[in-house]
Amino acid sequence: MSRRTLIACVVLVALITGGWFGVLAPRADLEISADFALADGIFPGNRVAILGVEVGRVESVQPQGATVRVRMSMPADIALPADARAYIMSPAIISDRYVELGPAYTGGPRLADGAVIPVERTRSPIRFDQLAKSLDALLSAVGPSGGDPGVLDRLLRSSAAALDGQGPQIRDAITNVSRASEVLAGGSGDLGALLENLDRLVQVLVQHRGTVESLAASTAQAGADFQAQQQEIGDAIGKLSNVLVAVDGLLRRHGEQLGGDVGRLAQLTGTLAARQQELAETLDTMPLAMDNFDRAITEDERLRLRLNISANLSQFDTTAQLCRRLPLPLCTGAGITNPVPFPPDVEPLRALLGGGR
Image (cartoon, rainbow, N blue to C red; front, top):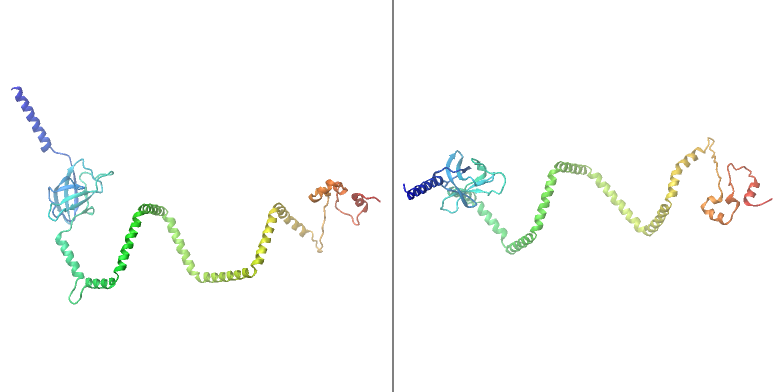
């Protein structure tokens, strides 16, 4: 065998092998099925598309009682979302129908090989004869029947009577709606933010549903209580109104006098505020003083008092400055010590005053 003949045989074998793998060899395909209520115009060989782009073919169409199962195949690298839908599309009145799958896969769970799209997620166009029957039934229901002009006739007559002469108003209404639409379009960003805030508010309410229900129940109970006590509340409001009227009259008659009283009251409160320490000391000692005063009354209803006086003038703030300037005996003496004899001894008193015989 010559070299040229050997090369020709090798090329022929390579072409046959490539053709077998390209045409006859089995390929891994993704097969899915979809159940339709109607599958008119769908036959084996019809195309399958995603977003209008052909990706596969219809393999079989099998009636199954109330539904029709359409089995489709496409390359294994085609991805569809797990909740994919199927639609029978009719691009023109006279044309081959095809199956549209969607939406396009963008991520997440994928539709597995052999999966079935249920009838709840499929749609098919209505037949023309069904559309004609539906229109005929509708027109028969609203159209004339014997001497009855029909619902549609009465509707048209009443609408004409209601709109007669209302053209300018309708025009103004349409203009206002158009302006309002322009305003809404201009504020679309604000509307989006408003909707986002409302969505967050709804989520918060859902998370605190128990609290919201409790608040609603409490509000309902408060409303019921208010309704039950409406008469008493009305009387109280009436009396309060009378009191306010009386207060208004009092202010009108004695407004100036009340103004002066309020000013003097302000001065009094200022004085009391400046004497907080003295007031605190008085409040601390007052209970004990009152208790001692109660005990000073004897059974024969006489008051017994005992004065413990042992001080000189230098111990008082008001006379300390005088004692520093004038060294009087009362400023340095031992003071007066209880008990005080009666009649008093005059000699110690003269000594305290700095006098003589």
